[in-house]
Image 1 (cartoon, rainbow, N blue to C red):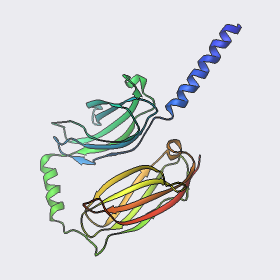
Image 2 (tube, rainbow, N blue to C red):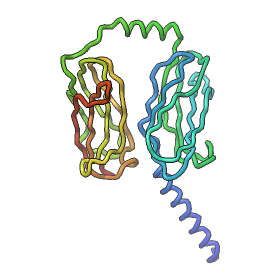
Image 3 (cartoon, helix red, strand yellow):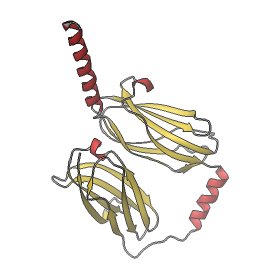
Image 4 (tube, rainbow, N blue to C red):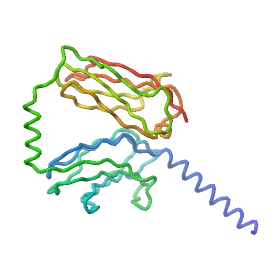
Length: 245
């Protein structure tokens, strides 16, 4: 091999390595989708994005029965942070669906994606089924407590890239919002937050994975808060853990 060819090959390898390192800073995490919708109900989609520069966010809704792509949208992302939107759909056939989300370079598409899609499943039911379930839920007596309280936050003391669950048990005195924050327990910097409307006492389980790929190693804490209608904190509880490599 000539010296010139060797230099070109080394430069190509370094270029690929640099591209991989740069793309590692672009992540989709905490994708949350409404579990059940009606045929003409745009699903609510929430996620956290980490980008190193301007990127294209692609979101697709796929019908699992025949793998048909029923809706696709593209959104320019200029900075890291939470994204919350509704996917405009109509006349959906009842059945099982999946939401796929991925990042690509500016003006890029599927073949330019920076990583494999992040996915979440949902179901489409008929209007009659949806109305029946809403009525049944409305007829249920609210299971309220005398005071608002976060009873339990369960999470491993040490985690890496393995899939883990954040489990929360709570009681509420009326309809509330459950807010979950991820903080550094070293300087209390906030790395992200998720909101969950809650209507009765219960449990919440949040599946998580690849935390070590999204955040630097260190000491962290989950802080779970119960908020009233004015976003005032009426109860909270924390859980410390260590994030390894």
